Amino acid sequence: MPLDAICLQAVVEELRPQLLGLRIDKVQQPARDQVVLLLRGRRLLLNAGANAPRIQLTETVRDNPAEPPMFCMLLRKHLTGAKIAELSQPPLERLVRLELDAADDFGRPGRRTLVLEAMGRRSNLILLDGEGRVVDCLRRVDGSMCAQRQVLPGLYYEPPAAGDRLPVLEETEAGFYEKLSAANPERQIDAFLLDHYFGISPLMARELAFRASGETDGRLCALGDRAALWREVEGFLSAVRESRFTPVCLKREGRPAEFACLPVTQYGAAMETEVYDSFSRLLDDFYESRERQERARQRGADLIRTASTARDRLRRKLSQQERDYAETQNRDQLRICGDLITANLYRMERGQGKLVCENYYDEAGGEAVISLDPLLTPQQNAARYYKRYAKAKTAERYLREQMAIARRDLEYLESVLEEIGLAETEQDFLDIRSELREAGFLRGQGKKESRQRAAKPREFRTSGGFVVLVGRNNRQNDRLTLREADHRDIWLHTQKLHGSHVILRTGGQEAGERDIVEAAKLAAWYSQARESGNVPVDYVQVRYVKKPAGARPGMVVYTGHRTVNVTPEEALVKQLKVR
Image (cartoon, rainbow, N blue to C red; front, side, top):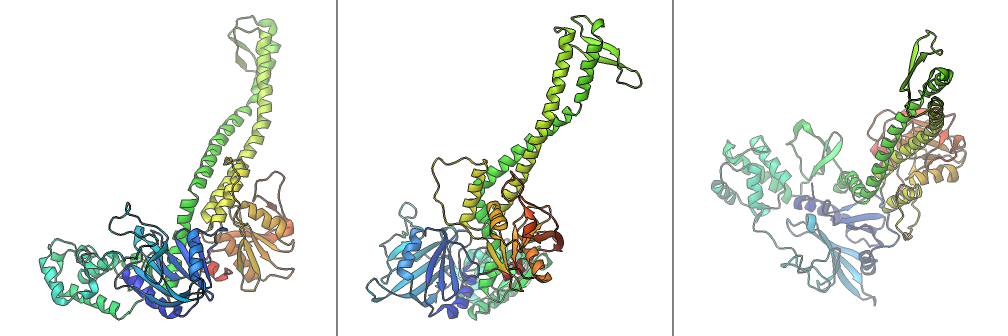
């Protein structure tokens, strides 16, 4: 669910004491809709994306593009060194104002305001000067896009217009009963609340309906006691006014499905409830997997399409080759036909359509019936069978080689599709694209692409203090295992499943069993077995890992390995990750 106004109020109240007085050291823009302010080791994320607008402190480290966008450069110019003076939210508005004490180009003190409008597809991030004029914004809104309100550099900032519904915090008991009496009795309770009040989310409307009537879709006419609905609404308003908020995440089968700032009971046993110690941690967990999937969908859509098309084409080709190969296994029958024709030349005449003769290759002494081409002489018919036999013999060797290549490429494309699903940064997608182009599965663009800095492997540290490196793509897997790792380091990989190469750097020391298990869990997490349990992971010293001649990127062989069975744990991955 998107962040509603009351949840946003809870987040702002949590952030205010943590942020006031902090100085902005750096400004980053890791994605088009995301800005990160670095504040003395803390990361303040402002997301103006349509699907996940929010403000929070984040522990997730996001990679930045080599060339920062123009809006990021503008924010760096105006905000670097500025101090947070105030963090505020207009009542029940999905809008946050970050007031900043900054200095101009001549060192004179001034004021800048960073406004986050967390309003779904109309979300925006706007920088204002000391007079309230727009310096610039993430999304410029001109008259052709909205005739009522423009957001353009140089214009005075106007907040979004308020709706005609009553802010829910301003409701009184008398006013509530008046609206209730005038409402259609067949109207659903949650729809009644959403129709009349501003600031209440659909989730909380359903929750209030459930608490008052026992059903999320209960109707007003089914209310046995109308006072029960007011009591629930009044309790909800009291909790909001007194800031009695609780970060709650609702999970279905272990995956985040909803979040709220107050307890939610409407789902019963259908969902698990997890209470967090902070809203920022809740939002990090809730949006992390969703953002990863969204990145893969947006940036990797064409790569997935290319790799999937090539994989499906290879599957069809391999299937045809296997059928052709099966046919070549009967080639001895062609040679026998040629031999029998040659042995019976004295009996044959030109124009025969078939030859019926004794099959001396048959121990039972049966007869053979051989089809002939009437337009050919007996000698030419025999030569035709010998030629087909020689062709089948050659085809067997050729098809065996081609099937091995097809199976190799098919396995490689499966690993690429797995890489795309695990890709996290823009550079990851660029590397995969370049890898597919070098492998011949993606055409060149006709011009040389600008190359960003090489992405670093994912880095973790075990409980015993050992560094663990995890490859991001096949080419990096090769580089990590075959060039950068010490021959005494430990190499780990899921058994017979596609996944990243994992290197446990030992520096010649003896790694403990706990360190190996933790590294194995990382290997299982960054593989096809992420959602599985009891995953077998092979591990061996790097010296015993080799790359076969002609193998695709990421493909290696190894000997002398041991195997440990582990269950991937997302919490452990976050705990071990080096920030």
